[in-house]
Length: 527
Ligand code: G4P
Image 1 (cartoon, rainbow, N blue to C red):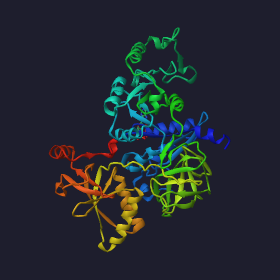
Image 2: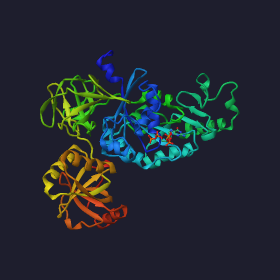
Image 3: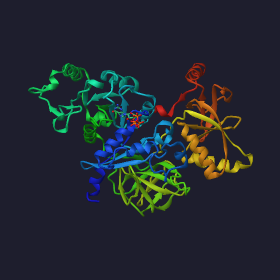
Image 4: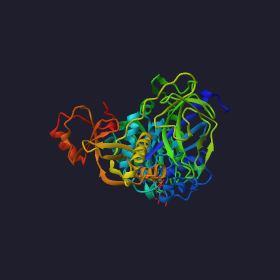
């Protein structure tokens, strides 16, 4: 490595994009990669998404559905920074892995379709970022189309997500009348559909264009000045500290498809996005600049190569330097492991990684050694990072083995897949039926596929639909409170969980049983 260790670490920026499907995540990612020179052709990421990509490495299930289960990591260099973008799969492939990916990043970029505003999946992913207190940068996309009024979008951020915002720039018109953005941060106007040389118009101290300019003839220009004045007087003030603690989100307007405002966004993002952050462990906070190597596994990808049953474990490096071939300690078992096979993920292929530092993601060959949340450490001191948060499943199925003779394999398969974090297991009280919980339908399909492929068991899954899962603070409970509308189950740690039919059933239950304290781990209310 050309830079010294410290500079290498400080140059890392590791983030994920959170959005609802179709907001423009793929389009924006592709533009960012083009700036970084990580891909040459627009269409590479898109091709991957739509399944036109080489499928040799992909799970069978991916091929069948033409979607990507792979949550890959894309890396590029820009202005001295090394940027790692972790993909957060959406659509039907939304799963707990999507949430877990957010535990491995230092910041998040939230893309919002300006016509649709804040949508369901964005809210879910936002909650996880909030739980972790990471900085969130907002990109209001598709300004080349008619959308909601910008002030309305800011109001949604506060009302729906409960986060305050600071618009770094402000759109001048939108849709057919989109003229560009008034950049409050750089005190300039960036014009839409204007050649590079003339694109930027500098502003004077009062934030106005000096001398003659065609923009001045547009009533939209005056309107924008008025709106910006309003923001200056009545809006939040910018605070780098509040951005860093995740309580203020800088907002950028633009259009990913036409590549407008993306470069400005990237450059400003890099100014304020945090370098790798210290993490809590059993040995206290671990400084990313400390020499001792450490990292944790946040995701395990099964069967990336259908010819093998091997898996890839995704390791987030948290301190020290990863070197291929190094020996590390796996805290959970206390065993030494030699990290001989490692992979780095790129936009268009995978390549071997020899060295990596904090903030980087390394793919480790996994013959079945790792579990999600595992900590690896080099050197003498062995410690463990805080366990990964629990995510509340929303979809449930009742599961049995098709062939009763296969019970042993069935139980073994379930135990292992549950431990690995592929799916959550619950048992009904008294009747001891197996229920599986997931945050996305794909988890069930992957479960079914892997039970067959890896344990040779056909499973029968009976859909129970969506339920509201709430854990209990009380240890003691009358199990007769279980009913079809508020089903009582135990999780794999034997803790009670109620599965409510809907919001109404939840409220009704709470009214009837005020002494029972329920909580949702994803509200950060885990006692
Ligand atoms: P996703 O990964 O978040 O699901 O979204 P993706 O980038 O695939 O974008 C979803 C759709 O929105 C695509 O159109 C894409 O071209 C369009 N889009 C993205 N950014 C912008 C933008 O800034 N302005 C406009 N007008 N459209 C945008 P599609 O018709 O679904 O796909 P395609 O036919 O373009 O491939």
